[in-house]
Length: 125
Image 1 (spheres, one colour):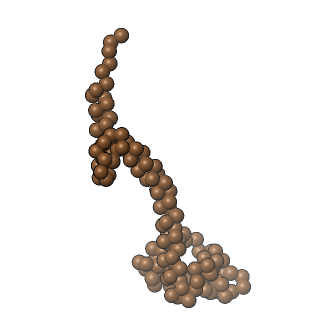
Image 2: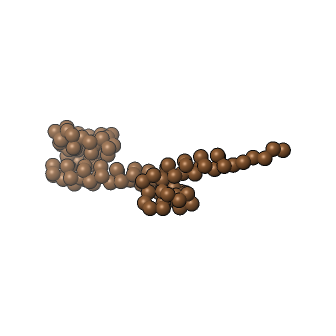
Image 3: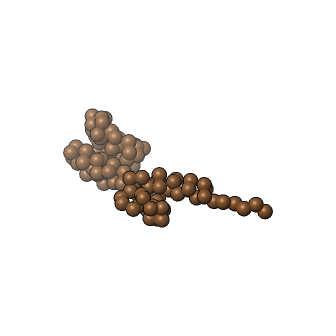
């Protein structure tokens, strides 16, 4: 069996890790051993925060919808209840975008919700 020398393979692997940790502080991008640890943690944090970002955006949308609806005289929780009661199927992302970019359309939706909340059957009147 022939002898396998690993020098080139090892060098390429180290170069790849050091390239991925470019921008990390101090020895975290200079020394392979520390760079590898830094990269493992960085990738772990990236994975966690990709999942957290979904909740962060949902919270942002809720704040935006709440501020816009409160300005029109309807608190957030009553707005969401009224949307269900009126049969309006818009998600929070769309509502928040509408509140920021198209306030007149958002105001029309709030008026429909108010009328649905006022009527005993729930249908807009």
